Image (cartoon, rainbow, N blue to C red; front, top):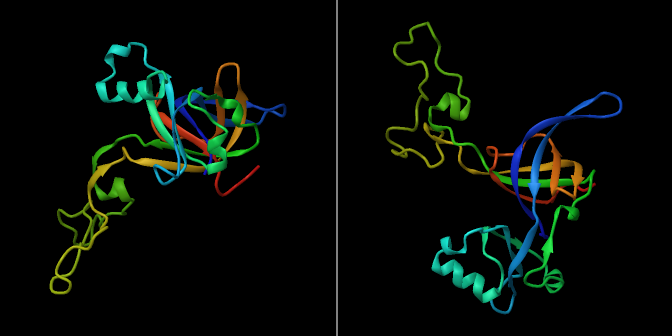
Length: 215
């Protein structure tokens, strides 16, 4: 629980330290974000901040429901809206229109990043779940990349939920935990984190302080 940032994944690169060691990093445009709506326990039942990222250039392209939402809060229309749960005490320290940038993070601390993984389309069990496949010889016939049995005949007489089978792969919400912040460049709102981040280039990501690991 706590304020985070909405960002856009730019891509990956490498940085080198003074000893010549190479570190792969993901470059993220993190913020700036601004508060669009405050949600309190009295009305909504929980405390949260609705934040916007990247203002809309052409206001006429915003639909009527969103236009009314932004007009009610007197906030500039944003392309991306996300909600961050906060404590009631932290809620009081923010006002509608308050902005916050990449400076809420510092090098050396750890963050959790959520994004949408790359879509792979329809995939079989070998690609999707890592099945080994059937033997290539010793009696196998037209059965090499199949998944095998998916249930029993009599009891329970149905395929159980959660069975690993072929289907759509990727394009799901994924969170990578405990990524180390390598560098914070406040002048350009750039955040460098060690390792890979879910999703393609220009994909929207959510950056929060790590839940399980601190600096």
